[in-house]
Image (cartoon, rainbow, N blue to C red):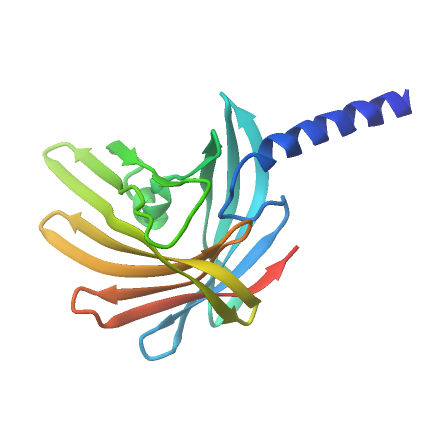
Length: 231
C-alpha cells in the first residue's frame, strides 16, 4: 500500500512538473524559493525591503497559476511586517501573464472595503522567447470606486514596452545574464497625473534582478535590487 501511494504521488508530481516546465517563467520556478529585495532612493538611502516567496503552483482551467507571497518589512526593523499580500501569475500555451492587480496599493484598497469597487485589467504578457528589439504588449488597470455621492477613478497604463538588450547584471545575489526591458508608466488618480520611465533587468526562472525608475524629466527616483535568493 505504501509503495502504491508513493507511486501515485510520484506520478502526480511528475505530471505537475511536466506541465509547469512548458512555461517560460520570469518568477521562481520552485515552491519555497524566496527572493529578497532592497529599494533605494535617488540618494542611495534604503527606503524599503521586501521578499517574494513562491507558495503554490496549481493547474486550473487549462492554465498554470502561480502564487507569490509578497511581504514588505520596515527597513529599520526587518522583523516588523508592514504589508503582506499574494501576487498571482499565470501561464497558458507557454505565454507568461503578470496580473496587473499587483500594481494596486493594498493599504489603499483596505480603505475601499465597504465601497463598490470595479476593477478592469489588461495583463502584461511575456512570450516564450525574448530578444533585443522585441516590442511587448501594453498593460493596464482601472479602478472605479463608488461611495454614495462620491466617485473616484484610478488608472495605470504601462506602454512602450520593449526588450532593449541582453546584459550581465551583478548584485549581492550574484551575476545574471538578463533581458533589459524598458517601459513607460502613466497613472492618473482623479486629476493627478504621474508619469515614470522604468527599466527592469529580468532573468528566466527567477524574475527581476534590478529595476530603476525615472521621473518624466529623466531623473532617477528609485532602484530596486535583488540582494539574496533563499531556496
